[in-house]
Length: 577
Image (cartoon, rainbow, N blue to C red; front, side, top):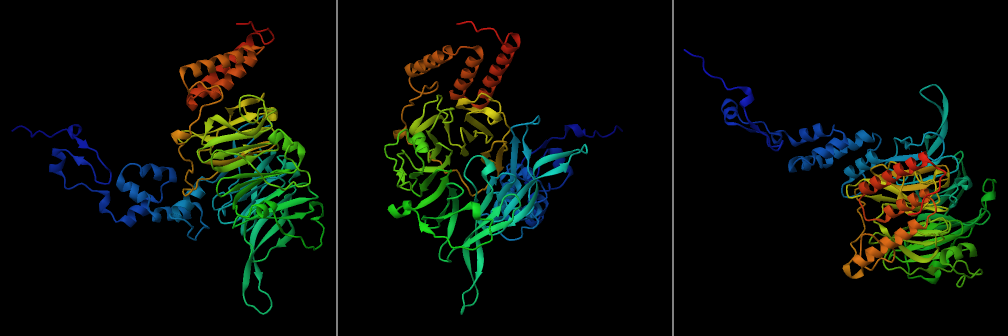
């Protein structure tokens, strides 16, 4: 008798489907085996417990495979286990609709990155991550160190120190050690100038329990301002307010001898008081007067949502999106508005309203220029443009808000002494850093000569970067993702879309596009050398409506041509076309 034919294992066909429902077996497989095992047969608690050991990146990827795993991976029990693994000391349930998921993602994405402008090693580095920190909400670099505020009100003091490298050498490292400065903090501020050498003191707005008055029991929570030395973290001064007053933001303005502290209440009113910083380290007690700021006295119907300041001006954004300015020196006033017609040196606190087409969401205030972002994601720049820090493609000052048409929906905006930075996000959620203005000292990596238009900087941006800051020595980026902070931008109605006053290669009629091309060709032709023409062409690429990959391609190609031309004969004159 012949042997019975056995089907080859290679011929067994298995149709794979959703992992939660098990595989679909072929006919031969179904005859030889029983019902397939499905993940849904396991207790949900067991599945959640197993999944909770996955890394966050793999957990998110698994949740995108099917509806069953999406539901399991999104369960609060899974995120509670992940949160406790990422932050073992965080035991209390956070706030929000999804408290454990929010807390886990805040702690997973938290990070402070920096890139030094000088030295041989120019790459992105990461600071030490405090284990006690519950996400990162704000940060501020000072003269010697960095301060970070988390989402539960703990203020951390990140110190620079001498450490031993892997080769046994002693080297200076930024933000490599940390201590807790204080708890219960709401906000903090320091000298508003861009140069961190002036930031000697740190002003912390906090809530403290105060003992009750005579004849009463218990204690009351009162807001206070505590002043610390940035070099050592030692507290040198404290002022406590009445328990009926509750504040949410603090900014500084003015010189050291007449430092004005502006405090924003929960109701949207501005109070101010003046201190002398040169006497803060003297052991004495005195009373300061808290007064209502003129913007709240003259416009009592307005509710201020947030403030921004520099040494000689203050900007207020109301809850309705209006913008009001206080300018205290004639030089800055002339730079911002192009005239001194309405400046009154005897009444420097009088608020001046800016005329804007839509509601403003946030702003960035430099020394003599300002950037504004409205509810449709449009960027408006105003002020001094000597170095091209407005990003308008030229170096003409603007006395009123001027739209930068080729940039929209930024993640963050920062204005410095004579340059500006924009953190933008692409359609694939990748982020890139754009800059314009003066490039001296390496402050615009990859563009040492600067640029009058926003160009992509040679720096790797973290995926969850949300804010940035630049000093004379270093560029800082804060990474943090809050799932309850949804994009607030709206789509611009078709009736409000206006023509582009600047030359545009991607919008308008064919005649307008042809005019823009001729305008740019004339600008290139006016350049005297090949190097200048290459730089001008890079700026024009930044204006063109291209994708990030296409812009990178053109910029890299232009860099290659520029290097090749310089290697052949850097000193020869460029032939005219």
